[in-house]
Image 1 (cartoon, helix red, strand yellow):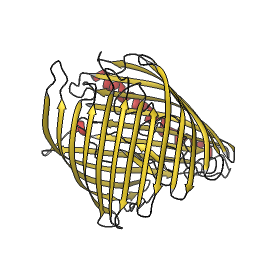
Image 2 (cartoon, helix red, strand yellow):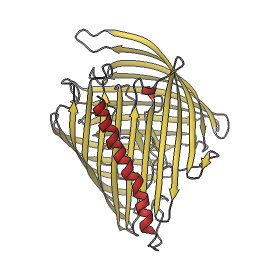
Image 3 (tube, one colour):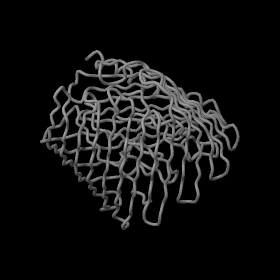
Image 4 (cartoon, helix red, strand yellow):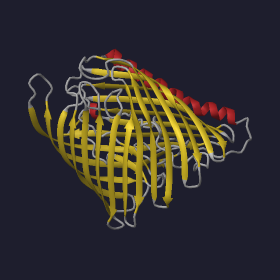
Amino acid sequence: MATDRDKIWYRCGMLLAIGLLTPFLGLSQQQTTSDATQDPGAAPTAGQTPDAAPPRDQQQPNSAGTTQGLFVRALNSAGPLVGENGPLQWGWISVRSASFLAYFSEVSLTNPGVQPQNESFNVNASELSASVVVDRAFRRTHLTLQYTPSLAISNGNVYSNALNQTAGLDTSFQLNPRWSLQVTDRFSYVGSQRTFAGLPFNTDYTTGISAQQNFLSGPGSILYNRASASFSYLWSPRTTVSFAPSFGYQYSTGAVNSAANVSGFSEGGNITFSHLLSTSKTLGFTYTGDYANYTHSSVSAGPQSNALMQDFLVTYSQQFNASMWIHLGLGLTSTTGNVGGIGLGMNAGITKNFNRSALAAFYSRGHQFNGFVTSSASDNVGLTHTINWSPRLSTSTSAAYIRTPGALPSTQSAWFATEQLNFGLTRRLSLSGGFSYLHQLGDGVFVLNSKRRFATVGITWSAQQPTRN
């Protein structure tokens, strides 16, 4: 086990080292260049479509058929990293947010085994989290490092295995007026007994894009890292072509028995074509292919053979007015391996801003990271309705469903529903509360069959005043 963990951290360290060295190489090159070009961290041009979906490599892969622009997205978000640095800033480094959250939960699970037994228990805990950003713009290069650690506390004890961490590294270059390059690395580690208390998907209402969040309870722990280098070519003022080679690594342990483990190393990339039909309409296509090599200790759960995963979608996006977006994608998804076959690939979403509320809905089918290592395509559907009752008070009602057919030993699925409330105390300080319900059917090894009801209450400090939809 120690040897496996050493290999994991070594590989992740190499990925981060490559990304950290890249901006300095770019800085040495730009000192001999005098071309005046657009800062790649600025707003996207006509060739860098503003309706770009979150890249596969940012925090968790999305189903194919979503284009990507060369600008930095906030971790766990569908929108770009923007806003104020705030008063907690020291040179390149700034603390963007900090929060304290208390959980009160009731869990009912079915233990794996020949004779399953129902077991119910209460889990009360607290969580401290923060968001730290390192951001520096050079003349032709932009370096951004994001880090969001969170620490769980229960009965006065701090659990080291519950130190969840997410990090993102983005280094972007404007090579010339037509060519752009962005090197991206996304790393996350989730310890045991994780409870998700946010909305099941995050939406950027200025672009109409939604990014799914991982709300599954389990496995015992999971480590994920993905790195890519995205080359974007501005073919014409309306047309952009990009290709992005990438590789990733996943490792997870059993939900009950930590000796059970599965890992996957993948290599591949995607190709994207995007054409602006008008200022409000975009047509394109995207292809994503990954070959994954799996190792595992379980003969009943997890991928049992290597697999080639492919997704191809034709996409269409339209902004009807300043408050409404639709995104459509249709094509094929294919898996070659122990769970093989060709099926329908799809990605559809709609967002609508009303006077004092906002609505977002999406459906996708493709290969995604869903909280456990699998080579199967997943179906995902979600809905969120947010109401701004006053300048200080807002509520969000959301529900989501995920289903992975063909995952061994059987189909896995999960329902998640939540009601969230937020009250602004000051410009930067707010109170939050909510009630959530999660019902999932797992494989009994990495994801357990369980039902979870939990309430949360917390306080959040943010450098940027929350925006109202």
